[in-house]
Amino acid sequence: MKLRKLEDHDLVAQYRNGNEQAFEVLIRRHQKRVFLQIYSKVQDSEIADDLFQETFIKIIRSLRKSNYEEKGKFLPWAIRVANNTTLDFFRRESRKKEFRPNGEFTVFDTYGESDQPFEQEMIESQINEDIHKLITYLPEEQRQVLELRIFCNYSFKEIAEETDVSINTALGRMRYAVGNIQKLMVKHNISLEF
Image (cartoon, rainbow, N blue to C red; front, side, top):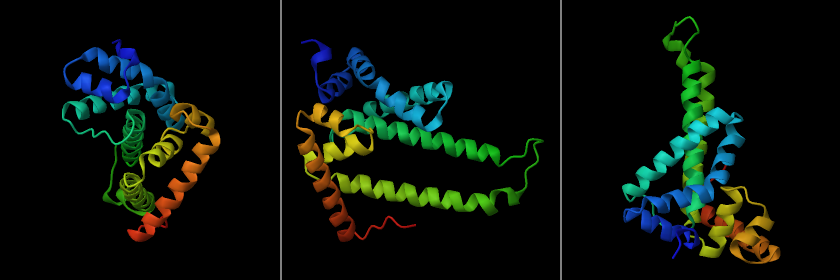
């Protein structure tokens, strides 16, 4: 069977068994979406290209260490890795700005205005982590639609094509997914306010 015809999870399994070409197929299949996700945040093609490479290095390491668990599709997971890589980039950049151009640095540069955004960033990161955990409780069909919509920025038309259902079915699954996430948030005492 040709590798191109295999599902993502089969390609991951093939790669873990030593088939390097299986990973090349995965990259080719999803490189445009992952790159565009990164580019939409950084708005610079050179930086986006670097972060794209860094993202796939992290993906390779995770697959080799068996840190990847098949909880849906490969693409939403790869998008999450790309988003985290991009967030790490912005953190590194904000730390660089804490140093003065002439090389001077004082302990006070780490306090004041930079405290609030960092705290907010940490809270947002925790909320995102909590929501990622809650998503795993959703039925597969709802989880798939939610991940494609939120993490991959798919339109409902694209979701319908990807999941082979009507647009109304995709919308209905999204509505149920959001409702179930809200119930889970109440159950687990998670708030989006910060």
